[in-house]
Amino acid sequence: MRIAVCDDNQLDRDIIKDFLHTYMTEKSIPNTITEYENGMNLIYDIEEGRYYDMVFLDIFMDQILGMDIARKLRNVGYTGNIVFLTSTAEFAVDSYEVEASGYLLKPHDYEKLCGLLNRIIDRTNIGHFQVSVRNTIYSIPFGEIVYVESRNNICILHRSDGSEYTIYKKLSEVELQLNESRFLRCHQSYLVNMSYISKADSQFELTTGDVVLIRQRSQKEIRKIYQEFASKGVKV
Image (cartoon, rainbow, N blue to C red; front, side, top):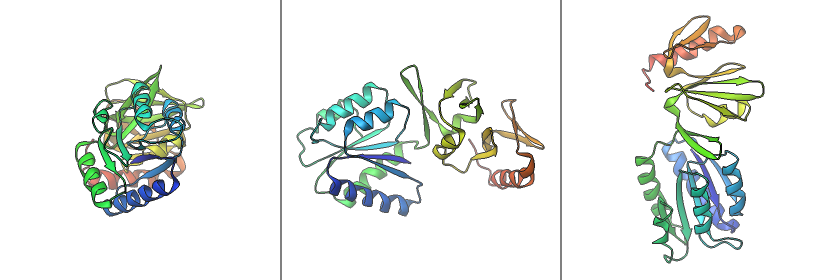
């Protein structure tokens, strides 16, 4: 799970980060937490294709109100969870306008944070990959990603419905974002969702009819990883 914490107060950011780290460790949820003390930097990053499953956003910041940041995030196509942090309930009604997932009052309370996270995670598929296409952001469930291939300094994401998306990142960067055991870096140019593999030989044949190469010098080890994955009966 990728989380952004946007608050211009360092102490408040530290408290939320500590709470989140404790919760995610207890739940065994892989996570990365990125700090922002400036809401506009958060907007710029999301506009450039960075994706967060959840954004914790302080209402009162010096340069621009958190509510205005939330509106801008929705306007650029961000569809993830927004949780407001504030010392007053004054903006509680406004939070519905931006489809906020929660509203936490300061001083921070760990138990209340846990209750909110439980509700969000219960209703959210946290495994999504964000792709920006002509100013539109698509949030693609991990289960619909068949494989990603590297071509001439860009990557092509192949979706289960047959659509393709161009990603202006290195394959190693995409690999870090697809942080689930179903994804296997089987070749310098390929990252495959093992749920779609139908046959493993000198290369992987996929249920879509596509073929993905296996790194020659590591064929035995790569096939073993797939066999262990397949033995668990994991579905898309």
